[in-house]
Image (cartoon, rainbow, N blue to C red; front, side):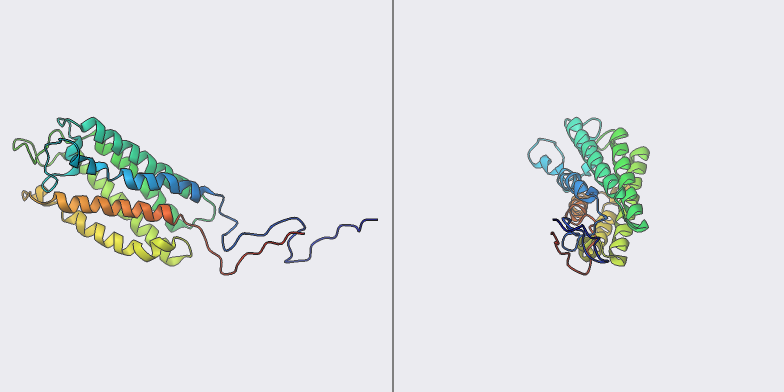
Length: 243
């Protein structure tokens, strides 16, 4: 004769069930892990400008903006424009998946939606490209009002996402890699971004170097988000209790 089933005592796992795995909050439904893939791919694709070393673009990387690669009169503008749009869609997808996960605090959610705004502004950059490449065409205007505006919006959204998510990492228990490296990446990205504005004030030359360094740092930022996707760690270790 079998014993009658008994109810588990408080704090004890039910028979045949497994408690939360080591240190990972059960509130994570997997959205953070799914977000890692598009963000990781975007980190690489965002630096597709390295293809200019393999293609006859006619532009000098030291003295040209990366956006000149997809200026309307450039031979590879379709290629680089498509890569930019695909990268933006990957960033938006990863950010949206992160924003939908359970238990996210307001700082990280705001930062993730700022990433979506960054992606949207990057698409707008391609929709209203530079008409020509000022680094090789002296008759070309150095400042395209619409393209400059979309680029400014992209940078504002990018730095907002960095600041908000670094704040979330410092205040909480998620994003360990962002907490450790995020402030340094943010500071370096700001310095390199400011170093690219020379042509906007009539002082072109060597702005291509800091801009490409800036893009590498953005790739590092996306890689940090992909490698540390907001998983909450508990203080204790989970235990398997199966009966």
